[in-house]
Amino acid sequence: MRIEVICTGDEVLTGKIVNTNFSYISQKLEDVGLAVQWETTVGDDRENLLRAFQLAGERADAVIVNGGLGPTVDDLSQEIAAQAAGVELVLNEEWLTRMEEFFRRRSRSMPPNNKKQAMLPATAEVIDNPIGTACGFALDIGRARFCFTPGVPRELRRMLEEQVIPRLLAKSGLQTAIHLKRFHSYGLGESHVDALLTGVEAIAPDGSVKLGFRAHYPQLETKLTVRGADLDDIKKKLEPVEREVRKRIGNFIMAEDDQTLEGVVLGALGSRQGSLTIVETFTSGQIAARVGHLPGAEKIFRRGIVARDLAEVCAAVGLDGSSPGELTPELAERVAQAARQLTGSTHALAVLIDLDDGPDRIDFGGTINLAIAGGDDVASRKSRILGGREWVRLGAVEMGLDCLRRYLQGLPVDERIDFEKV
Image (cartoon, rainbow, N blue to C red; front, side, top):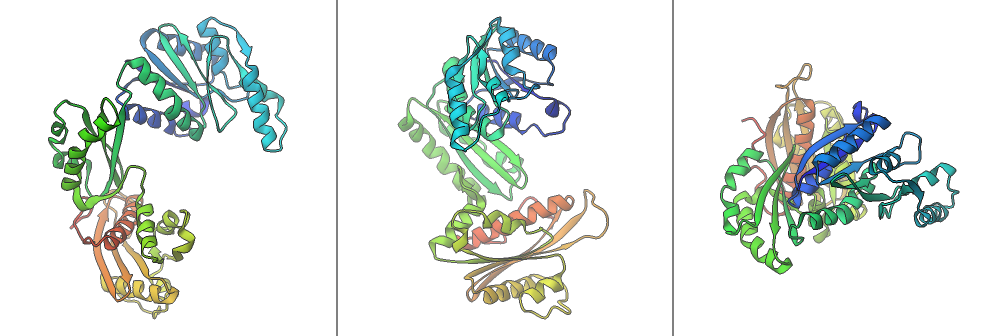
């Protein structure tokens, strides 16, 4: 089935906002075996929108239009959709009532211009939006079935997953029993994992399992898309492939499916009634920020200590801050142990970074000395990452959390990764 995605809005066309909605739509469609053939971005111009809708209706089987469903004068999707389909705009009384109730529940009066959001093409099928005022809708333009979705990311995502994708799968005739298994790893590059997993698809001999990747440094997502007659059939096909993926990637798998690395760490600490203190330099507190907002963190996360100067870090944990000396794994161990004792936590993570001098550049790097203290036990590692200041910061945050995950799971914290320079 040929699918086109049309993203609307001057702010998207001019690059004032990054169009993350398109990448999300495309990835979600790929996950269920549907491929986008065309992507079009159009500004808030009636003539250009009309031509884009007409052209998509000539060449695609299904079209997802994102944006242009708001209450303001530059939101044109309903008007132009009706014109392209050759029908009138009519007031949908049911959606108008829904909007009025939406505002009433929030003790607000609905502004008059919101009524525009209930004006839909006469032949449109309403696509529900349970968390916003912009309803989606579907109708035929030319040979294609169009699905119109709001531009607000959280509204789009819910509508896409719950309503738009099931409609597209039904139209495509593909099996609707589909499962996506995801493995999140840190430390191995995409080409490395691709080589490690050579032949895993063939374990399911009927071609029902498709392997895919999504790299977003510093993590890699490995995806298994599985089709079957029903969920039991899917489970049977997936099980041997899943087992082989775990065997080949091994310790580098840090989370699965909807899990996050920080969630895994917090869960491991919570299961042993543990607590955590984090000490970090250069990362601007990003390690603590990954953990501190999670549900249950209030019982586990004791304190975050953030500084750029090593002497300040040492002073903050009660060590002699006047002359800390050279940054080494041994010093990181002392900082972690002192932080744990100072705060009374069961575990402490120290991620201390010695940056190169000079301006940011591709060969700019940082040497990471990290340590984890837990009771009388302490583990540490030293690593060097190149690639610029942001690359170093992101890598250090991920390495710190992943080494803590490994420590809590009884795995070695010093396994070599693809992103470090020996």
